[in-house]
Image (cartoon, rainbow, N blue to C red):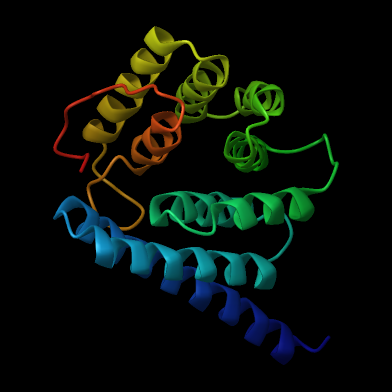
Length: 198
């Protein structure tokens, strides 16, 4: 592969990632304003762009899979397909990063495989404090432990409130919103109040 072609491929996956983040941000703004119809359309587009950026990116760009899953869950459509796609993309490799484990854990929750979700959450604990907080929520959700889940979501939301930088530029606790969507299907609600939640 020539240097010119390699440069074009790098530029392509970066452009796709930028486009995905922009659509994600538009969706988040709409969601916070209560425009769920627009948010759904934008999240669907964001999920597609995150997937395209993953396919064009170098190996181990796992954050794009997480972005795809979050957007699919928040769109309310296509999440089953997204979960299956993550399973195929990650394969059976057990030597993975906290970010890859995060993608695998969310995919498992979507598919109702609580054991796999908990196993992947354990791998997430090798990451930063934010990964550990999210792993706590995933394990509690998978086990149906409502008090532990509420405590974990509270910690996630308060962490987002303390941040000065957000990936999309929108002040929203998107991790908590995604988990709450998954929790609602299981009859669990953390009922946390915050300006960073819709």
